[in-house]
Each structure stands twice: as C-alpha cells, then as structure tokens.
Length: 155
Image 1 (cartoon, helix red, strand yellow):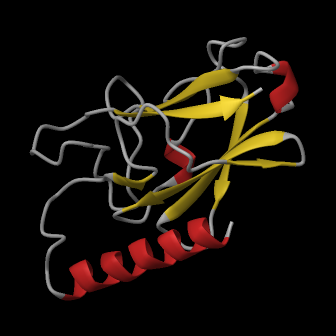
Image 2: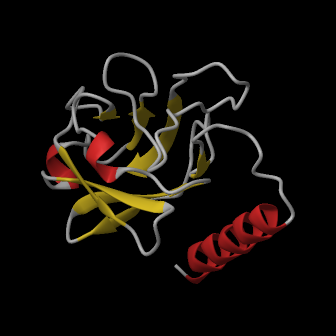
C-alpha cells in the first residue's frame, strides 16, 4: 500500500508541475492512472470484499457524466458488465470505481482473473471534464476516444 500511495503522490506532483509550466495545453480529458492498455495492472484494491479502482485524470472530471453500465464498464470473468458505483476521490482529478458485488462473486476462485475497465469517450454519453471536454485517451485532437486497461486479480 505504501508503494501505491507513493506512486499516486508522484503522479499528483507531476500533474501539478505540468499545469504550472503549461504542458496541459492539449484540449483533452485523459486518464493518467491506472496506465492505459495494460494487461496486468496492479492499480486496484480489494476493500471490504469489493474491487476498488482509483482513477486519476489530467483535468477535473464531471462525475455526473460517468454512468455505470453505459460509459463505465467493468468486465470480470463472471460478469460482462459488473454493477459498479462511481464516487469522488480525494481531489477533483480523482474518481473511485467500486463493485457493488463482492469480488468472490465476480472472480473465478483459485486462479488469476483478468478484469477489464473501459471508460467511454465515444457514443451518445461520453465521459466529460467539468469544462465539457470529452474523454480523448490518445490526446490527438480526435474527440471521443475510449480508455481501457486490464487488471490481474487472484480469485
């Protein structure tokens, strides 16, 4: 846990520095943590039996635009669209995704499971920043690009 807290503090410092020196000139909302397109991220926690994923964005995220099952999709081996809640993190740049069901009902026991998180910037209900920018994970100017990453979780 100490390593994860230290990593988050480092990312928050880098975000603050990039804002101060003008590196956030791109007009895009992006997810910084967990890193995108991983196949075995360890950036998750099991808290009270639930899977919890702490997200860090480059800009303040509009939590009301994050709709579980529509543009926030958590796929587990036993549930293609696990029911999740979205809540505020410690800053305006953070959001917390947590499963409603216990991890034991979402994962195969005794094996390593792949759990995939998708955040959609595409479609009719894209995730947005508080200033209205849509999620654009590639930050290439094309609006509405999705974020995806996977976690290796032992069942």
